[in-house]
Image (cartoon, rainbow, N blue to C red; front, side, top):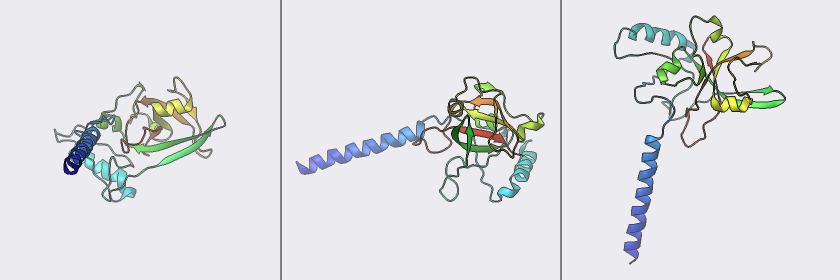
Length: 189
């Protein structure tokens, strides 16, 4: 009787673990993970140059749709860790804390993230890398603004005002076990 009970318990535990793995594998992350290849760059100080060189070399390949870069690993890095960047600022006497994601042009297109409002970063707008930002829905809620496109605010008194040019749906940049968090996305200079 004890052996039978232990066998049933082990099967139940195995089924639970299997279902958890299936859930983690199939949970929608909010971006296209199936056709994206992430290439970590060991020298972040040369990151923009390396991305430009990759873009130049791979743009003629028909299998390559677009190339972009970000300052954060999607998933685990080579060392098994994740990288995060955050920013805090005061808005209307309230502290706003948000994750920060610095990206290159074509980030939304490459990752398959659809805009809910506004526009993507565009090379023809010089201010896109200086002050314009794209935020996710959680960040829009945190700002307390119903239509945030065009809204401007200061994150640092020594920098120009940030202007929201687009809003994207929430997506999982980090572990799906964590709640989706506010994001402030700005273009790489």
